[in-house]
Image (cartoon, one colour):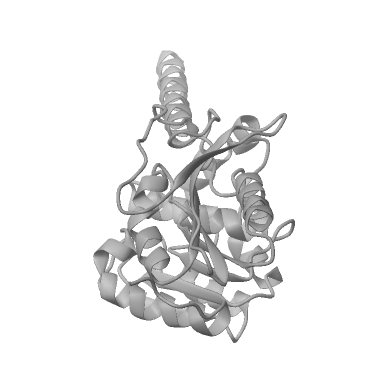
Length: 291
């Protein structure tokens, strides 16, 4: 009897400890980092913009108007990053003749917000930013370039606000799959991911079953270019191919050889240019590069 009690107490202790560890991991996963402040960048003629909306986070961004451009490109960064990470792409695209809009998503950089979602929460940000770009550059086409979290935000926002063309980098197919691939115990990855994501309704107001870009991307009836690393440990080949199949036969896919979950522009600027610029010229709008 005494042994049974001791075993029960030990088991309860293990369960409590596991719950505490899981809850702490969940807290870390959704909490924003320190709010940051940036000076205006050199090499790109930007102005600072803050989007304000009642009941929503303030969104801080930069806008660079390329006079005479046929189109504007909105850039959104990855999870835990900010608009500064998208500056090299922005400069390249500006020199190629496009106007530029780049923002910090809520919970990142200079923007407001206390949590970081998984693209589903940030869909509201992406929709607001795309709508702003259409107002600011009325009469011009608007393209979306998103990395990881930013790519997911664009996909989830498409039901309310679509761009005219999409470049989606390192987009995951489902939150459950990509979370499982990040789990520390390979033999129990699905179990660990399920337990961790069970907190989402309490923390964010929606569940992992709703966070499935693979179920949403097919509703986008605009040209799409997918960029992925063929050695990405978090967005594996099966996820990328599932996204391509769901998006439709006309969707283009470019693999970056041996690239993991890294900044694909920094990984290979030449391959990035060779993939993105012809896609935009063909499927978005033709513009003259800046000297």
